[in-house]
Amino acid sequence: MARKRRHKRKTAVTLPEHLLRAGDVTDQYGLSEQALMAYLPHPEQYLPEGRRKAVTCWRREDVVRLLKTDRRARAAADELLARRRRREAAREYENQKKEVFRYLAGEYALDNLLRKAAFLRRRFVLHVGPTNSGKTYDAIEALAAAESGAYLGPLRLLALEMFDKLNARGCRCNLLTGEEHIEVDGAYHVASTIELCDFRARYAVAVIDEGQMLADPSRGAHWTRALLGVDAEEVHVCLAPEARNIIVWLLEQIGAPYELREHKRLCPLTFEGKFNGYGDVQPGDALITFSRRNVLNISGELEKRGIRASVIYGALPPESRREEVRKFASGQTNVVVATDAIGMGISLPIRRVIFCETQKYDGVSRRPLNKVEIRQIAGRAGRFGIYDRGEVLTVSDEESIRRGLIGPARQVRALTTPFPAAALDSDYPLDMLLRAWQELPPGAREQKADLSEALVLLRVFDKDVPGADQVPKSMVYDLITCPVDTKVRELVFYWCDCVRAVVRGRTVPQPKFDTDTLEGCENQYRAYDIRCQLLRRVGINESVTRQKRELAEKINAFLAQDKQSLERRCPQCGAPLAFDWPWRTCDRCHYRRGRG
Image (cartoon, rainbow, N blue to C red; front, side, top):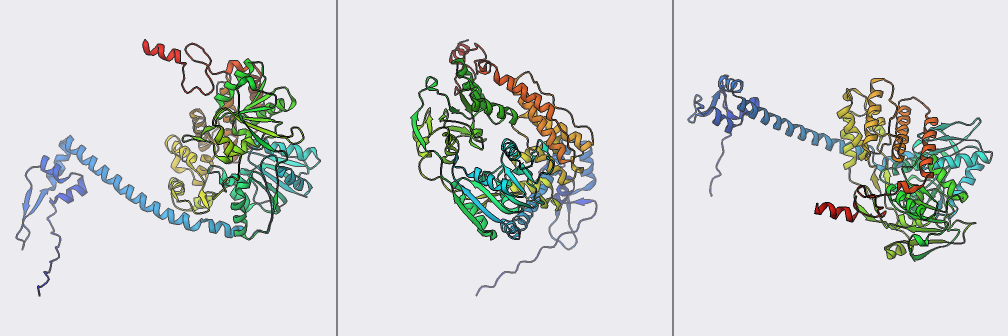
């Protein structure tokens, strides 16, 4: 039997103070062994006492002299040391991020949120139905009959509509949105955007509108938070059928009793096939496209044909949107041209919905409309009491629209969980908390709130705000979660100017956009919203109602003028371009330029 060979453990050789091995030189001075052989080609040979093999080493004074006198050697050493520091920092960052992963996934898991919500004593009423089914009407009736209550909606326009309706009925109600706060004497009701839900107040009845929004990655966390935390004896939730299962599951998890009320459409919805072009436009039509540019282009083409059109798109201020709705409802305009902003909460006397596009850009790529989007938009056709039925047409892709209107939509599988603000009290850096939250894997029933825009603003904050590392994490989080369209660079720059002023304790600058154009007025209005939001987050309430009203009037004047001036045209020859033309110039100018 062969004997196992024993390996002797090597012991480190202790060198005199003035000698260094290659590894020691690399660790202390940043010069690799290859660099040492290149710049100091004659190493020392040191034979320790009792050893048979000499150790290759260099004299410390030679290494120090080299780094002082040779710039190339110094640069090589600096580069190696910097590379090593980056690797060590990256390794440390990854280790800490894993620790943050465990912290967020354990301390703030969905199970813990559900456990806390189970202590509230509430009863839920779920109003399930498609658009134009009267579900919101029934919920508001219960709200108006209660001693106190809250309406929580997705849009300022909807909150304002409920504020007007309740006060008109003699039910005193306050208005609370990110842009304004109107208090009515003796009011025990509030109409609010869902982001501003007051979780400290106790209500008799609360209404949560558009409950299916809990699946939205960017805003859905506010619906989840409201469902779990709004404190009311009775909570009415208005939702589309595709969100029924996930909300029922949520209520069963927290042990809350609930009642399901099914609502049917009050008038039928039929698919009428292909739209035959502008010559087939009729009063009561809503033409749907998915960009502001296309909305203005189509409305300009209609007005060239003598058809007055209202316009509705996301960047339009609420006051202007309300004015456009009023014009269409009163008959001042015959048709409405809109983006999918029309699909949520806007009640209009629409007879036919016409899809001018069947694809939309979702922030990443252009994709076909899904069944939920088709139904949400198409459902605006047919107003009970005005039209017996609603009709749906499309310019292209008839089969996808037809399929979208048939059969049930796929059930929502996951709700959106909010970022835990309590985690800001931990010792972990804010950027690490937010990045770790973004990278946490989704659960079977949950997805994490999307913080990509907050991370964009955090990068701007760290880079452009002096003394950024001295600002408390909670304050930074409040500033970077201010609603800002990060795709509009000018708005990001204005946000940064405001934040710099807030951090320094100085007066926040007034926005100064070009108000001689429609787009400039819209950006000026949005900048005022940013200003109000930031000031409110640091405890300052400042009203800019007058300035915003003047801007809204200016925007209304732009929209009331001949929209042919807003029509999309070739910048070289001025020829009109179709709303779906994919290039900046017309074919004629493009080929002429190529030949030149």
